[in-house]
Image (tube, rainbow, N blue to C red; front, side):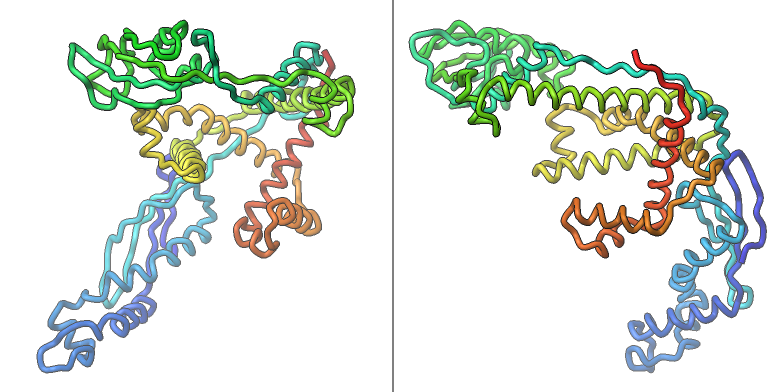
Length: 427
């Protein structure tokens, strides 16, 4: 039960929580029944010694730790609910007293959701600018489609050019000594891809198949291998083969190959329409972002740093999960990029802070406007997700808790309300 609730700082509460002797005794007895059979007591067969004999031999508190572990989590959150606290991270818990006659007492330091004041969220002024689709935009998209349908051909009778794929052997030397990781055979290098050290690929350009030549470079000061940072190096290179990508002609046959249209003009018209629709969506998103920026600029809240840290951790976990789906680990990614974990995490800090502020502000608008999500709306959204991911709806519900999903939907309604109340003019 909750004994006391003391606010010790902004967003910090210290709870004193007591579990009474009867509840504690029942947990101790349960711990004895579970673990006593594993314990040896002279004069008794293993697992047959009475609890009193085990406690006499090993100490009265032999089962206390297991009993506390079985009880403290429920006791903690019962007290948190009783205190009416909304936690933003798991409390720091310390057992302060324990005995057979009195049960046990613990102290829980809780970080709670901050109080939020949203001063301005209605009548926000914003300008909507829809980018026009240009001939250059359409040409670029057609070129992208050409690239997708390009074929690779062997180059003969000319020197290497930027964009070619060169098959090379290479070996690097620093101060006349070969270094680890500086040798490769039959390596396919796309010239101009900036895959290798700055300056390397440029010096392959202009050479012909069969040439053996030296490439002189300087390793960057931020290179991941400490022993090579800033060092001058020479690579002995042999060029074995050149390949280039050959683009298809832009004509009606091309249009038939890459789309459902019979002519190039029909394809261009369709690209014009789709790109205009995308530009409209982008303009809507920019307006929405501007409205949200104004809201968080005018909100007031003392946000606990742990909320930002938790968001950063979540982003790192998501990034790691995406890497694993591609067959790579986060450790390997950091090794390849030469980044330390601290530096990697810091790149998520600024967007994490913004996301936390946005969520707090929009949830406060949900409260102020008494925005609710009906059961019909909730069920429809669960069904939509199940259809989208080709999953059973029950499985979707097990993965996405109803309370958090309901708030997500309410937050979306809050965004719609802000947009509906905004004063938006077209540029």
